[in-house]
Length: 422
Ligand code: B12
Image (tube, rainbow, N blue to C red; front, side, top):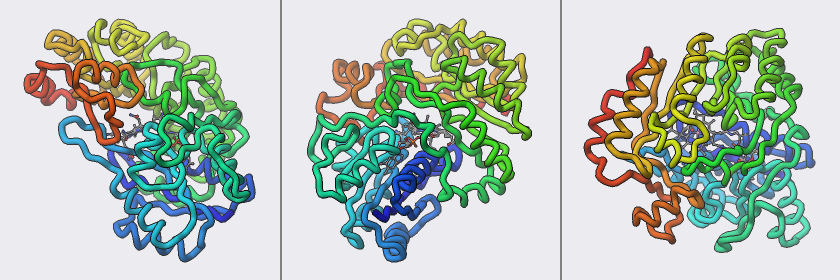
């Protein structure tokens, strides 16, 4: 079937992100024999016009739309980001009879609510590489697709599950539909995203990752990752962002990646996210020696009781050790504080602020109020505390902020996000 793939992300918050997930879906569709065309809405001001042109140029038999962001997670001034995606769906409906299939990280958190809000025909929660071609086969044969894991239909809450690609290494990590980004990456400050693993075994009380990728870790072969990086480096791209939830989990995989990066005949610069638990000096040295220039460390709090209530498997002392190791090896450190969750009070906030200051980070990002995602311990706590009602689908952003902290908390953190050397 001819498939039109649309990347519906129109945001540049913090940086331009290349839609590598949709690229992986494009590559898997090609492998299954489905020709693909691609429309990126990032720079589009006239969404209906762009969609119409794409549909006329290559009339598709199915349309896939990638939904990355739902909102900007800003409790003070939240922006809901699905209206433009909805414009795209409406334009698809107006100019094509093809079925519309949703997918992507944001979609996967809200498989039913986003499907209903956007008015599409199907959604695939989780990995797209095997589930999307499987859905297309059913549609072509006129068969019911509901038993395909991860496939959701409108108005059918509670069924559908999540799709997992058993062996991501079977599929390319990059597809030529993304090549135009490489031209931009040279000219703009774009860090090319690379994914080396899926899933996160941690179970932070507020996090949505399990809804998107599940808890079991699925690592790519470092050999395949290096082949992809080398291919991109040959085209002149040397800045990479490892988009893994935690680059250092498991550490053995991270060490193999660092060894591979070091052995490449190119000098690459890269950034990654670290979980500050049991980070060894051997790993930090290997990271620095293979081109890591920056690590994002979401220690979130400097107060151990708050860390425990977030279900973090590290304490403040362990976070400090990780950050000191990074500093010793010359890796830029971006720290994150997430304030206002259950159990937070003025003392714990002050402790966290003092902790963050004492680290002399290169940059600090402070978030006040925690975005509530469905099916998380935080959502259950928010229902118990009367912050949200049990039936709230949470698609429209809702936040948890421990009572009694406002407006003091905002004053307490004012100016804090600018501490550091940048
Ligand atoms: C790394 C990351 C970042 C990095 C990106 C770096 C870079 N160079 O790309 C940084 C830190 C910059 C960032 C910024 C932001 N991020 Co962010 N980010 C992530 C993270 C951890 C990974 C995203 C990723 O690259 N995945 C790898 C690719 C391969 O996977 P994928 O895109 O999901 O694709 C797979 C499936 O979804 C599916 N699929 C994808 N498209 C389609 C389409 C169809 C039709 C189908 C069937 C399937 C399908 O198949 C793919 C392959 O299996 C996710 C959380 C997560 N675990 O997913 C959050 C996440 C996407 N981010 C999120 C948010 C909110 C943001 C920000 C708005 C935060 C902010 N206020 O700054 C910005 C927005 C940036 C922007 N311009 O769009 C939220 C989105 C949910 C929401 N509330 O909106 C997430 C889900 C995290 C969360 N809190 O839950 N982010």
